[in-house]
Length: 78
Image (cartoon, rainbow, N blue to C red; front, side):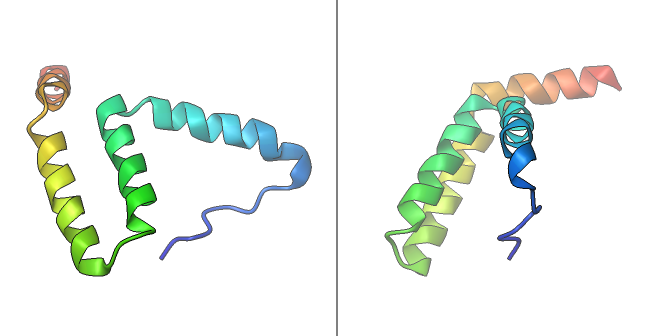
């Protein structure tokens, strides 16, 4: 399931956490917010409801204006 991505010594925990957080901030703030909501809501729901929330949330992210802009920028780089 990928519950543990990396083991960090205590003395490196803060710097590694900041690096991880910086990588998250490179993503769409809308998608990150949706993901955070799904993680929080997913703890209190059954699998069927969780999957429905995931599908709905994916459609919100896919149809967002930000996705269109990022896709356009990606295509223009090539």
